[in-house]
Length: 171
Image 1 (cartoon, rainbow, N blue to C red):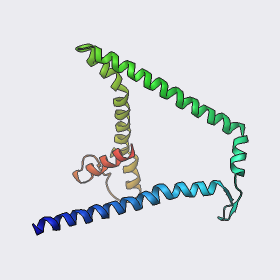
Image 2 (image 1 turned 135 degrees about the vertical axis):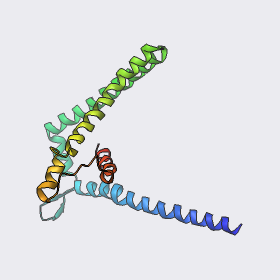
Image 3 (image 1 turned 45 degrees about the horizontal axis):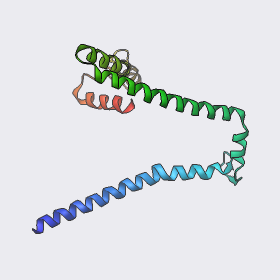
């Protein structure tokens, strides 16, 4: 019974530690930059880092700028139209597909997933070219700096997994 409590205490300590790490990360990566940008929006600074508090002057300036107002209007219109069209068309297409069966249903599903698959294939082909031993830019950079033969990133078991992870993280 004592081992169970010890394990629960270890688990509790681990959860608290992980929670503190995540909270710290969230504060420094999420909350602090947000607050810092809000503070900066009420000030003016020069390249040397000197700040001068100017209140709402930045907001007054930007709200009088016709280019900003046009860009703001365009963004809201894009958002409203894209969400409306996207939601309505998605619901209509999903309803139509759910009422069909057999080969037609499979064809519809394939047609709607084609853009997703096409972009994945295109990105994969670009990365394959980047990793290509003879003409790939990564291999050319390494060969130009170090006196080695061109690395085979995707063919070598020691680098293949890392190469694929880098590609997947990037996209």
